[in-house]
Image 1: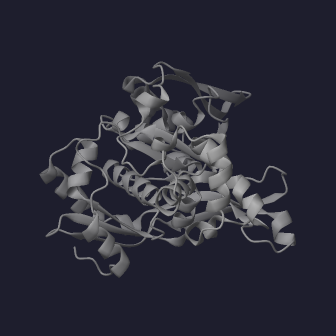
Image 2: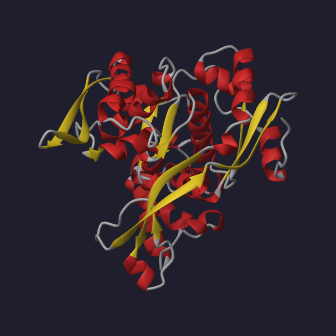
Amino acid sequence: MYINYIGAVAMSEFVSNPIFYIETTKDIPISKSNTLIEAGFDLTLAEHDLMTLAINKLHKQATGNHEVFITAQEFAVANKISESHAYQQLKATADKLMERHLKFPLYIDLDKKQNKEPNAVCVVPPKHGRYETVPTKHNWLQSVGYMESNGFIYLLFTDPIRFLIDKTGDAYTTYNFTNTIEMTTFGGKRLYEMVCKWKDLGKTKLMYIDEWKEFFGVVDKYPRTAEFKRWVLLPAIAEVNAQGDFRISLNQEKIGRTITHFQILIKKLKTEKTKEESKPNRDPNTVDIFANITDAQIAKYSMILCKLGSISDLSNFPDYPTFANWIGKILRDPESANPIHAKRIFKALRTETDFKD
């Protein structure tokens, strides 16, 4: 299958720096929007892995494009399979992805809508509680293609999916992709992501059976609850338990004798790595090298940074001091911020000021 469209900017990006997932990387940290974690869709294993890797790559490279390339070499490295097998999977995947869609809710902030403010559409409900929920259904991709001679797949995401990727920093879940590569079912991988999202609370939210069916992409299958449990939910639970990070169990709620809701109860089995141990291999331009920045330096450089044109688009603030205060918070605690914003700010600190770490 040949690519029917490749943006010039994206092709230039591919030629100059095609590889994101490299063989020396032991862990592959994934950051995925919570909206995508809980969206309803059905993909094959290869499609799910590809979309996860592509979305993560697009989010962390922060190019501003809707386009991303995944090479057969990257797919092979991430999934620990042979490159020839990766070629076959990518080629098969390219033919089907245009048909795939997903469902997820968006939220309209009624205060912002009434005041005609920007950014009224949100991926998480506004805390003030005055919002409207809008169920949405979208295609994943606007264009897709596989170029066999160069060994890569090209994905052009639709605007709604790119919106979710751009908003990842608002509410997201992180996990190690390598923990899922031995899983053999789509349901197991999806439930593992859901468990990672809710692990600190110790249980998922209580959801109607139809909501669970939509989550697994089987709304039109398994009309009987017992069949859904037997063929989808219980195998997914068993696979997450076999993986070893968690011990999960099923809680079910009834009205009379009829099961109406399911909930997953979660117990963490493995001690999470320390921050230092869990850091992936990083290039020298990431925020790790600025861990010892002082309060005096934060005060000085936040005022310098707030006036730089290269990051001026990050500001929705009325004046420089307010923007500088926001930057200072990120300099002090980068892990609490949107990773894209943090990376841009620290890059500007390194390349556009006289800061010396």
